[in-house]
Image (cartoon, rainbow, N blue to C red; front, side):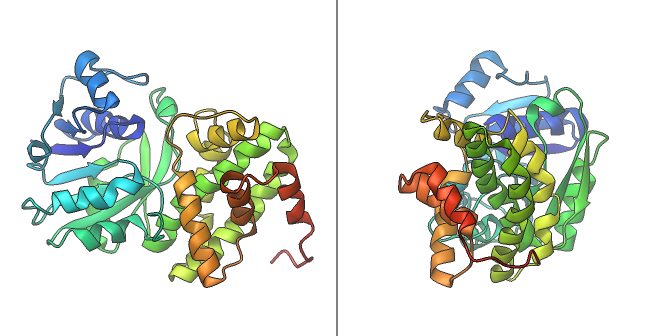
Length: 320
């Protein structure tokens, strides 16, 4: 009997559990902190705003119960991964396969999530990461999409793609862990910028944002030792429609409401990731004008329209 465990019962994590249970394996075990609102809702109603749990999905209140599986997907807030990894390291994990299904950089270190996990779990485990477009709302309407799975280990990529491939999600083999992790993280930051433009009703500028942001992200990827062209793959540019335009995108909506002077109460991973990007870019002298502008308006309360206009006053240069 094939079984997958899932740690993290937010919107995306619960969907991945549902997807695995309905397309890939015989049963799925789900764990979250028992006092979390998401877990309480699932326990009381066996559904959330997006889906209903199928009969082969089982909620567990102890993390040890889901660690019996050989294959474990993690989908939690990025800034909590290190503490979770430390907790997991207290159990016997030898030979287990982990898939990190969230997008961000650790703040303030700027460490990619695969490396955060590997730094804390001192056992012989296999770690991969998931990137690319896809919204729960679209998948639940059976709208197909693509994604990329990457790892430092070829066998880990092969394992997860063979396990999760279906006619709903087509998985590609990644070949740049650094580029795909950074690209996935920074598309959330670019989503904040897109939302701000929506909030200002400066829609025409979003095309320029789409063209210039991957160039900037490519510089950041290159600094980390990855391939700048990964910024044009599924993990970054491929996720733009779902992040820069979709009404379902938390990061885009955060930016839109911010521009309107309103508060967005849900998790937008681009906000802490932006802080990490700013720290690294300043320290390493990486040219990141879009991210620098975003940091000023979100963290330093700079006037939004004036901050955007400053970008146009920069010295002229060739496109490539």
